[in-house]
Amino acid sequence: MKHRNIGILLLVGLIICFPIQVAGQGSLTLVLDRNVGMALGSIIQGTFTLRGSGPESVQNLTVYFNGDEVHFVTGNSIAWQFNTADYPGGSTNITLYGVDDVGARYHATSQVTFIGGVVSNLITIGVIALVAVVILVKYGSRLLGLRKTKPRPR
Image 1 (cartoon, rainbow, N blue to C red):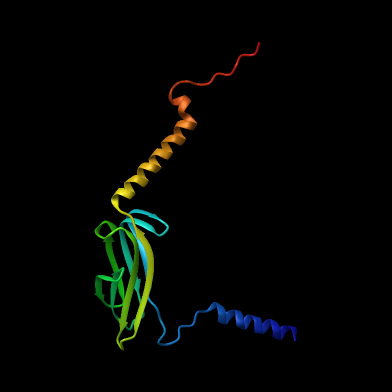
Image 2 (image 1 turned 60 degrees about the horizontal axis):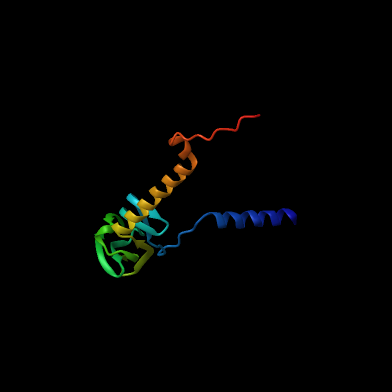
């Protein structure tokens, strides 16, 4: 009885551990890779590569930013480079749509915020100022040659 329970647990564990792809199922993947610029979570600025792929039956992929078509490719995979400066700043819903050979539709979305050049510059200046303040607080007396001297014993 004990061995049978262990066997059942092992069988269930094996079934759970191995992914099973049922014919006709599938989904699109959507990934943003930073090339140049900054990314603070979903807040991005700079040049990025959008990568996506879908099942082999997908015939074409279309990229939309807030519902506006920005790129189209034939096939089931995409690697498209874009710069956030070319698009309006603010909250952006990136959607990748795919259509397969029988007309079934697939999609994947990612919600990001494009920041403009001015905001990016302010963030950069703020970070540099913060680092400068930390350095001055920690090493300011050494940098200015005003070392604190220990009082001499009497």
